[in-house]
Amino acid sequence: MKFVIISCFIIIIAGCAGGPYTQTNKQYKKKARDFAKLLRQYPLKDSAGLPYAADWVGTTNFSMRRPNFVIIHHTAQNSCEQTLKTFTMPSTSVSAHYVICKDGTVHHMLSDLLRAHHAGVARWGNSTDINSSSIGIEIDNNGAEPFTPEQINSLTELLGRLKRAYNIPVPNFIGHSDIAPGRKVDPNKNFPWADLAGKGYGIWYDTTALELPADFNPVQALRIIGYNVQKPETAISSFKLHFVPSDTTLEVTDPEKKILYSLQQRSL
Ligand SMILES: [Zn+2]
Image (cartoon, rainbow, N blue to C red):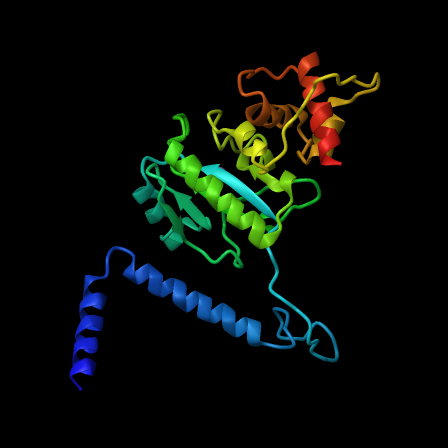
């Protein structure tokens, strides 16, 4: 009896102590419960309430869908607190699976198995619903400053865990600017893409002893790598931000053509 009373007391105190996200955590739970209900529904019905097929025979062999891309962002906000607030206000409609603060703290905001709203209108290769197939990681950064060593350490550890858990292919660690050329410029030029590629997260180039074919086409190379080349100049800009951040022009120089050729070969 005494134990029950103490337990109740602890629960009441914990409930009151709350913190700023008590209410939004409740909303998360409710939403997750609603989706769990949907998972239990079979056969699944369309918006008119009709099943997609005439007959249902449940298979015994299945698993959850898995993310196959990791998209890295900078928050373009002034603090981690501000970002957590933004991602817990229904009116903003935006979110990410993870937020990494300047001191290296990692906030997990959404199950990896659910769809966050971080990519917006985006495309990589033939994938057009990047939110459905990716994990979104936001790094607290105002858009122009360097990333802290603590952030990069936490990010590297997180990427390792995600890569192992979901078997994410090396080329599929990319930035928001890569999948939304002309619209997004994150993560900024200070992001250590080369170091991360050296650890197996994303591709990098090696132009040593590389001979450029006479008919080499830079726009075609960008397309093969994954960029949306509908507006080639925006794709060039995103490519340079990721691989040659020191060059902000739109001209593709001969050394840059070699970089593109090397990346193209690693993307095939
Ligand atoms: Zn972004």
